[in-house]
Image 1: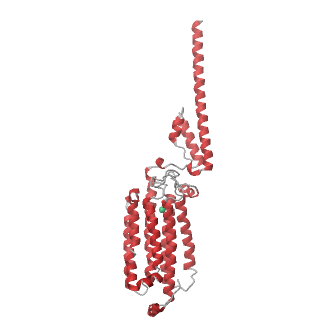
Image 2: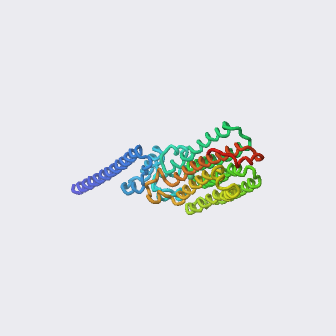
Image 3: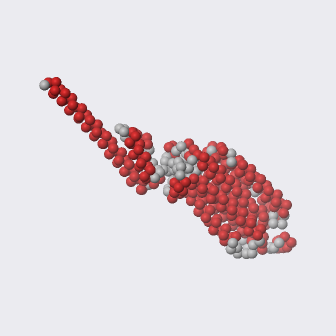
Length: 369
Ligand SMILES: [Zn+2]
């Protein structure tokens, strides 16, 4: 009889223990559900700041059934789409600017997901749209320049302006594509990075073509020499940028320096024009003022790009908007239009004074700029 009552008491103790453990599990489940709900609510308000740190989950929640919890978490992430991540949680190949602390896209191994990400707010949104909108604007502008010109244009003129528009469009669209798709995979990231750098070299080369064509309109030797020079230097730049390590963060300053050197090789024909035509003609007819404005824009943009200012000064404050790369992008688009304005002025001056045989009237010509 006494033996039976001891057995019964032990059974009761075990049953109570089991009930308590079930209750603990249930409480933990409720806790997790609340966390997910809270994060989901945050998601609708602040899309870029909704990353659920797995470490945080681990600390707050001791899983009783690990596989089940992982499955539940994965299901939640899958259903609600990808979450922006802090910089420290990114895989090494996606880490570029460590002054942008949060709001990064995770790896998105799907073309559709990468494309859809352009409509979300994250660290690349401004970079993508600044050059995508720029590329569309260049397309529209080129239509009016090449197919609906204000004055009669020769095939050669269409070609030189067409080269510039092609260069500008290629640079902007390659850049927009790189910023959209680089989070696909390490391999795709490398390929698009190289395409992006090639686009910059193409834009610099193409910018020289119309200026050299009109500035040395009657000097075929100088025109050809400088065009060959810029093409050779541009191709050298493309070859360097195809080097695998060129896109690594530690080569940021070197990249800025190489592209600036390519752009500043234009100083050679500029000094030639200045010495043969004089400063009055260079500034009033040779579009020198606009070229200098362009150079200033490129120098400021490239310096911000290389130094990562302003986010370096205020880490975490420019994660989504007004980071150095976006400012650099905007400066590139503005520089394209400043250059276009300059070469348009130079072209209209050149076309107004007639062909090379009547060039002597240049000196007496008064032109409104
Ligand atoms: Zn860029």
